Length: 115
Image (cartoon, rainbow, N blue to C red):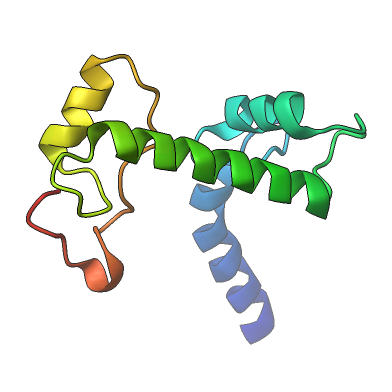
């Protein structure tokens, strides 16, 4: 009886989580399926629908190069990151920037003064 109650309680707690799962079972992260499709389209050289280690390295190098290009154009104070104002300038110029920051700010949940 206790086991049955425990299973029912766990099931009841899990239902709200399952309700938000995608019907097609896809994983949703930043950018969701659009980002995945874009990454595959751009970097899946062998067309197998997955990024190999080499393809991931190519994608990382492209991302790093784009980051350096953006910083060289818009990092006015030269601190190696974009302040809110520098970021706005880049966005106003039509630059495509990745989402800014993480939930809770920097490590430890502390936000810097320019975020």
